[in-house]
Length: 213
Image (cartoon, rainbow, N blue to C red; front, side, top):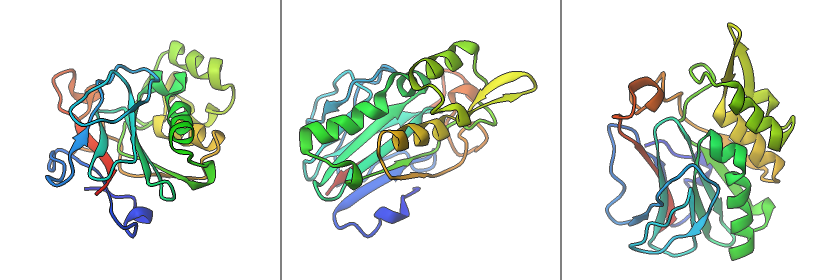
């Protein structure tokens, strides 16, 4: 289990990015999951419900929030002061469309989280080394974010590549989140992770979660 080291000393906070060798969440922390659609909707987590969304938020003790990924970026956010947590699924469509900013806004609007109090970490996802993209993806980012995500785009042998986690970091920073960390290897390169790009639609999924026990 990969952990964000800055969070390990927070009493009651449980979190992790699980790889193929550790597929199950802790038994003592139920995890709410959304039905992910590569969109920008963020929903409030409730026990037993799976809303169509790409992120969940909660302040409920004993209920974690999570997302599943296989190259897209799992993003966990925490506000220690408000004891709020969020899990976000950020593929290129969601990131380009504004799912990260929507999650930050939801924490603020629903729980009163201040930008200075929000910490974020992006987990294992496909890296710029392996993520070749088309001109439509470049246009989607440039059309909404302008030059903000330009450092995440590169050319390799004349083809567009995207470092999606760098784009996530840049977008969160631009939204006002000061503490943003990136953990883990490229999922396509790292053999211990499921990768849609490497293995196709039949691959498994990683679970990433966060919550207050």
